Length: 40
Image (cartoon, rainbow, N blue to C red; front, side, top):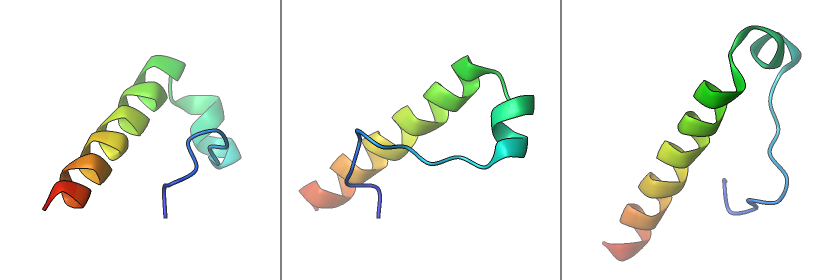
């Protein structure tokens, strides 16, 4: 689901209201979870 790290999709409301740093942090958490799931 989140395999493509080059293209990230986000809805307009989140993009307008959530700071970019928080958005980046959320994507980093998703990426880490993906790696953890692949290792198990």
